[in-house]
Amino acid sequence: MACNSFLPSFCVFLLFLLYGASYTVTEARVIPAMFVFGDSLVDVGNNNYLRYSFAKANFPHNGIDFPTRKPTGRFGNGKNAADLIAVKMGLPTIPPYLSMSSKSNKSITQFLNGVNFASGASKILNDIDPQYPFSIPLEKQVDYYLAVHKDLAQGLGASRAQIYLSKSLYLIITGSNDIYNYFDSLSNSTQQQYVNSIVLIFKEQVKRLYDYGARKFSIVGVGVIGCTPSERNEQADRKCNEDTNRLSLKYNQALVSMLKNLASELRGINYSYFDGYSVMQNFIQKPTAYGFSEVKAACCGLGKLNADAPCLPFATYCTNRSNHLFWDRTHPTEAAHRKLVDYMLYGPLQYTFPLNVKKLVAI
Ligand SMILES: *[C@@H]1O[C@H](CO)[C@@H](O)[C@H](O)[C@H]1NC(C)=O
Ligand SMILES: *[C@@H]1O[C@H](CO)[C@@H](O)[C@H](O)[C@H]1NC(C)=O
Ligand SMILES: *[C@@H]1O[C@H](CO)[C@@H](O)[C@H](O)[C@H]1NC(C)=O
Ligand SMILES: *[C@@H]1O[C@H](CO)[C@@H](O)[C@H](O)[C@H]1NC(C)=O
Image 1: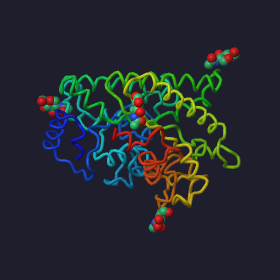
Image 2: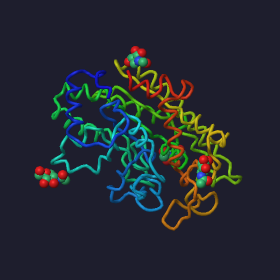
Image 3: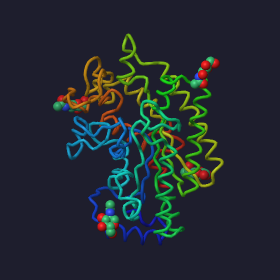
């Protein structure tokens, strides 16, 4: 355990914590906690608790490769990036915020490994999405975090909470639904105006997290989301939707420059940006080099590219999920999440900058 790298008072606390609970963690714990924000790429079951949401995955065949072999609300066949990073950090699975006991008796012990606030179909933009009005937008996720922070500060004392949180990792994976939504909505703003407005909201939310203790951010740009099976399905020739890809690149560029500025504004902040777009593009251009044999069609679904229907209980699914990039019409397989997470954690500067997550958590 990397306890000697923490301040002594925190270390005593951490020992107490580990002694008091029985974990089945194999890797050494490298951070005290992880807080996760974002969309279906990292939702671990929050949407199960949203009664009116249509953005759900708590039915077969989702979860067929999860350790329990059961649907959990994760949008995929197995674990997602939030789960896989937790393992690498020596943490147990980070629970969904909405699964936690009622506000009236929230005990801080349930927050101590971190909390996952991510919600399928979530956007950065705060407008009401006509398609998915009941998901939790980024700002609301940060509101929930502030409530958790209040309890942690009360339970641990302000200064211990500050040390605890400053060593923790804040993972944010979002933006895809905002990109898709630009083309679905009748927005009159130019692409650049739209991207700027999203990134401004993103910046405000990172600042709020910083104001409440966050110092280490792992932030992921949107992938080549014009090449998902559902986007290809809408193209006559099953090629990628280049409009979607161009807007994704524009957004990623704006996000990167926002992060650079923010790092010079906020003392003591450190971040790792992951260029998931380029890595995913490599997967698509040279599938076999990365262990994939199918990067166009979904594993689970129906019809053309298995993308005419979502992965519903009556859909069919492929036998080998390890060689497919996509699990369903919009979400990657666990195999793809694993490869992406490896680049996030250990990747070269070209994809993960100004430093990778392994170096970020070691600061
Ligand atoms: C809240 O606390 C009460 C009394 O300590 C306990 O019986 C109950 O199970 C708790 N509720 C939840 C949802 O944890
Ligand atoms: C976009 O512009 C048109 C024409 O100026 C206007 O009628 C429409 O209300 C605008 N739409 C939005 C969403 O602002
Ligand atoms: C962490 O961020 C600070 C500024 O907040 C910067 O001076 C420092 O070089 C960063 N550390 C690393 C290892 O990049
Ligand atoms: C499934 O695909 C992976 C990755 O391409 C491959 O290594 C493995 O051998 C395949 N498994 C089977 C049973 O074909």
